[in-house]
Amino acid sequence: MTTFHLRDAETYRAEYARLADALGVPPVAPAPGEVEFLSEVATPGRFPFGMMPAPDLFFAGAVASLLRPRLTIEIGTASGFSASVLAKVIVLRWQESGELPTGPIVHTIDLKTEDQRDEVRPVGYAIERVTPELGAQIGVHPLRDSSYVSQLVRGEELTLAFVDGNHQHPWPLHDVMQLQTLMKSGWILLHDINLPAISGQAYAPRFGAKYVFDFWPEERVGAGNIGAIKLPDNRNSLGDLVARLRELPSEVSPNGWKKRWREIDALVKKLP
Image (tube, rainbow, N blue to C red):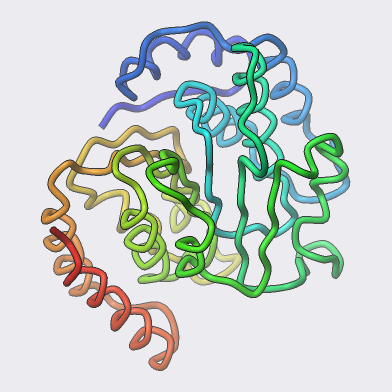
């Protein structure tokens, strides 16, 4: 695994070319305005709601910029902050080339209708505060899980996804397995891959994202609490991943984990 340290604008520029090499894409410079935007939204206290920590934000932004996807799926909307950041970076990259995909470029999905972390507000409420100009480019879909993604993706346009929903095992595995069915190639960002180490005594540790990242059978790149996994050409290796993670204790209720594992097993049977 290759590790990166993107803490601020300076390290972002310094690590950008090395990250491009790790992702297997041509080395380019950040898009005009990209570093400035990320620096602004990474400023502590910039917005009156929870934000991704700067290292996580810079890493996610760099991956989105370098891959320049036409469509991105996010699992776990919450405030909508990360969806806004991803959409803005992607738009800046496409604007650089003089074109922009039509319609939404980021679809974000959440099981809930409300984000209750700071105060009760509809999921996605932060989008109009962070990137009000991109409302038409970001589709918000409450009361949905990753199985809904198939209704949003056409052809082979999905090359980047971001899993940041329920972190209890096996939810992240379930989300990744759903997404990979719609991706011929590409990368999936995983947030909170180091959550057990940083949660302390605040709440029970959740290992779901960490398990998927640590045992992933293909290339991985990471930056502390966030990482990206490359989809394998041979998807049969995902069957081995599922078998290995099945041996680890589930962190959701019995009814919940039984349903998730049934769905995961059905997806494994569809592997080529």
